Every structure is written in C-alpha cells, then in structure tokens.
Image (tube, rainbow, N blue to C red; front, side, top):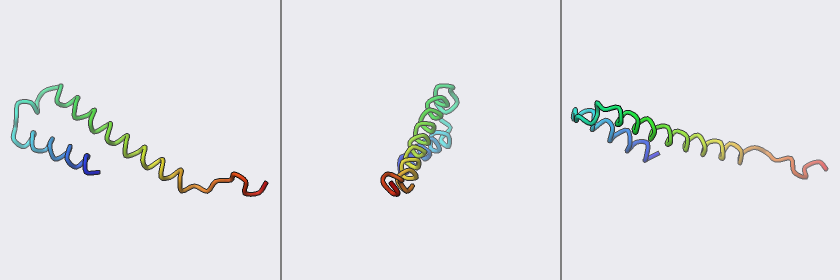
Length: 62
C-alpha cells in the first residue's frame, strides 16, 4: 500500500513541477506499467486472502 502511495506521490510531484519528462510517451508508459504491476500485486494478495478464508471440504463428510 505504501508503494502505491509513494508512486502516485512521485508522479504528482513530477507533473506538478511541470518537468519536461512528464510530457513524454516513455514517462506515460513507465507510469502505466508501474500502476499496473502494483494493482496486479494488490489483486493477487486479495485473491490469496479470499482463498484462505474459504472453507475447505477436505475430509469434512467422507
């Protein structure tokens, strides 16, 4: 969670300072990649937690 906040903060600072880097396609690509990876990691953790919370039927009524 802190990584997502730091990434968004850094992007906001770069855009707010109106650095020439912020207008490049490479910057947009890297930011999109980072946000996608972080979002995927967040989703992956949520799926693992959800699966761990599901009741198992191994040996319940056998």
